[in-house]
Image (tube, rainbow, N blue to C red; front, side, top):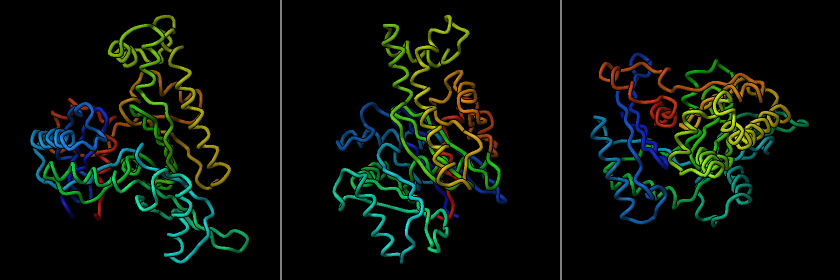
Length: 345
């Protein structure tokens, strides 16, 4: 099995996880995180890319990983994905052409710039005709090439590129029962990814424009304070109605309720279109999910068991990490851990 590191480059943090399989069990042998240099994420400027690459190199050195091979994640905001229910069953070439035709409806860049991949997640009989349920993901070739350049500057070899939601679905597999369908809510800085997965396989994914930064700005504007203070208040009090007479929770609630509306739409979609795959639990991941009161609010509003996921709990730890890991939060390592769990590269 190839030895590699899961690399997650976010807007604010770069995170890495290296996992080794011992007797069929995943063991976390190295991890680390560092700040993403401001303005480097998504930049096409060569100097900015080299600055980001140097930061990644430093992190690899500090984390004492033993390989330069990586599986990396494309930011969800840079990809387009869609679940197609009841798609015609065609020969492979014709099927690919039909999916590209559908994808053209949702992308804004030229077709020749599109890089697309598909997963067939089910097959059914509809009026005596074979139909497929297909999940496809598309991004621009320039987006892929940007990541390849950054890794080349950092002297890294990319084995595979995935989306954040595909990686997180693999992490969730450690916590869900066989055949169970779950909703994954990844609260990021610029948006929230709402995905549905079964047995570590992604069934659907969508991004909604309600992220952790937007909630912080709401607090900032409502109370006339600076961003740093607003972020501190959000992380400390969140949706706790027992503090400041519930004023902070009242300010945050409308944005969070919009997120809940989108989650509920996703659940209802599966109830109506794919009743054999209705989600039974919700897992919240990502640093933005640590906001106090979020899980309780989710349980109340959505009436479905909701949990905050610590990605480390499904893993054994190498002896050198048992003390060091206390410095990290497993809540925000869902992507790098999921990348690290990838097998059969």
